[in-house]
Length: 475
Image 1 (cartoon, rainbow, N blue to C red):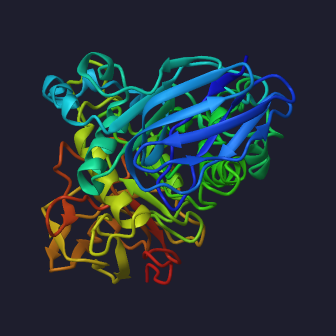
Image 2 (cartoon, rainbow, N blue to C red):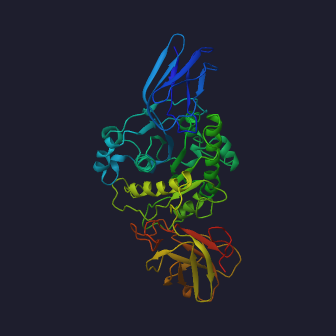
Image 3 (cartoon, one colour):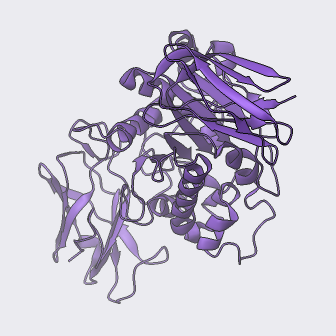
């Protein structure tokens, strides 16, 4: 008999890829019935696998997919066409919908979203790239509270909000594992790009790419969202500005090739910038990793990370989280910020503000620094959120340099003026913002966009860097 593995379908004009497994040489016929009927040309099982690319179908349904060979027929009913988003990362992506704030209310809404269909891969590892999942934790299902309770909260909320915007079916593939570094989600190709294959690394490199991502590469997906990085705050942190963009590039290449070109070669990739962990921590692990998540630009999209979007989350700490402060329960704001990025970057919706304020120009004088932002800002007082590095040397300031607070003195519609009085006679060599594990309390950072919705992301500017276009400098 033919063993079938049929995945979700993609929205027109992308073409859905349907594939499965069977005895060598068997002839397979795939037909589609519903609002539109079609029958694909028969294909032959080669090396145990068959694959059919359907003609484009507009979003909607339901459809019935009939797959048949000489001795076997499989029928899949209630199939929808829509956009698939892969949701990856570690424990904050794995964080369940039953654990968020107002979980009972969120779960009660599930029945209103029958066209948002989740799927969850089981936690498995492999030393080699696999053509199929070892195990499925939750097969495609129509959302209901009892099952959705163990599904990723960020993934579900993002999909639900996206459905409210797009008004057509959304497929969500959860494939994540708590406590995992980026290296285990990266292929050997991606690791090689950052020389991580040459370092002394743990045995689990690429294990989850092999078992939990590679089996999906035939699928036509629209995009991916990602919440990971905590495991790299102390593990190859200095390589994350290479390893994370390299992983994104490699995923894009693999899905594009695996789907026969149906998944875009530059499919949109959204991610969550790390939230918080330890309120008293003075280590630079979290702020450095946040910076490296953007390939050291401070914002996305940028020249290294094109067609990406970021949800800033360091202003969403949860000091009383029963799951540990590293696992904040407010995943609704995280998903809403991801949604804004998806609307602007993935769906090209105009006039959607998805980025918080970022310095456009930074000017330094003997007594003050003037920071001009790229948009109108809402500013509250702070004596500690900005810091300046006092140094007479030409070497870039680092974690061991002398950093002192630069309090906000004055503010304008799109600028703030900072005091440099604590630098004494030393030159101001660098400026940084929110460079702490826990920079502020819940939604209480000093700088947001004019609507007080999007926080300014952290940044560090040395004498020759700064500005969204890297054209300005601290001068």
